[in-house]
Amino acid sequence: MAIERTLSIIKPDATKRNLTGAINARFEESGLAIVAQKRLHLTRAQAEAFYAVHAQRSFYGELCAYMCSGPVVVQVLQGESAVTRHREILGATNPANAAPKTIRKDFGVSVQENSAHGSDSPTEAQREISFFFAQTEIVG
Ligand code: UDP
Ligand code: MG
Image (cartoon, rainbow, N blue to C red; front, top):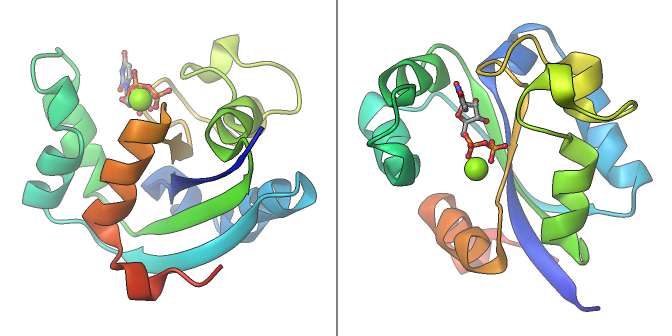
């Protein structure tokens, strides 16, 4: 067990429905601390670069358009086993398959509009955090 950092994004479907606080309460109640945070409207280029790993997937174009469709809140979460813990709190990608009491089960609209993003590994977390934040913007 170790203290880790991971990237969280509250997606446009959730900011649009005023769910930022409700989602962040889940993280804080679970012992994850928000150590960096900003509200952004992603450009298409930013969305494409962030999700470049999915460039060959059929949903890539629609995903990038959706991620630019409204404000997002990007943030760094810190805590014990934060990468895995965060993914557990989010639930499965498709809200229909997500476990009870997870964020995607309770707030997700569809497999695309699933309310929040979480890094899937420590390596990916490092890339995603540095995509949005300078070290000086992360205050643990
Ligand atoms: N996504 C989608 N259709 C799919 C699978 C994924 O629109 O069939 C979207 C969804 O918003 C998801 C994101 O693409 O969160 C990234 O997909 P990934 O497989 O990495 O899921 P995640 O890691 O977010 O659970
Ligand atoms: Mg993923």
